Image (cartoon, rainbow, N blue to C red; front, side, top):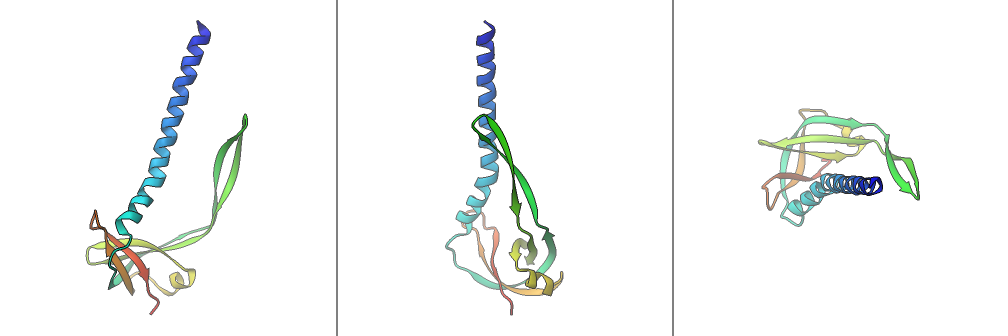
Length: 133
């Protein structure tokens, strides 16, 4: 009788872990895929945007745990440093990744030339490119 309860407990635990993994997958994977589909292959427009915010993310590592046989192994995966600008145009804004040089050259309040699209499903503002001018 106890063995049966242990098997049921392990089955419920396994189902819970699988559902958690599916939820994590959906949380991490679906938004970038939706953004790509929503903004892909559309007519690009040119405009002038205003830099609202600068964000620097230093290099770091993210621990990723995987199961190898019966052993759980944690590896630190490097995440490179990155530079982002939040650029607005009218009432819309989007964050874009830029080079360090471009990030260093500009400050909040500066105007920059951009190309952008409007989402096919959401009408969301997506910046496709920031020009150096």
